[in-house]
Length: 117
Ligand SMILES: [Zn+2]
Image (cartoon, rainbow, N blue to C red):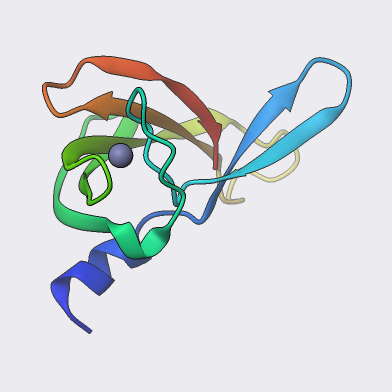
């Protein structure tokens, strides 16, 4: 695998958006989240690099992606919360974790919360 393929592997294929009364909507993360760009072709999205950091509450991965349609870079920020809920039944059960996806532009301006993964 090339580095790019490895990076692509770390990006969830889908995020889920909670809809008020209709459950969850599934959206593809293979798209460009920058303004005025409608690229949904994975072939035109090239992961460039990854930055990872964590504290005791969350793990964060920022994956920089180059869009070859608008020739700009955006960041998919994947945040996994640790210990969102504790099981009341068994103390040695795996804690539940939940991931959230955000899109940022190259200068880390927030483009919004995309959904959950
Ligand atoms: Zn684009």
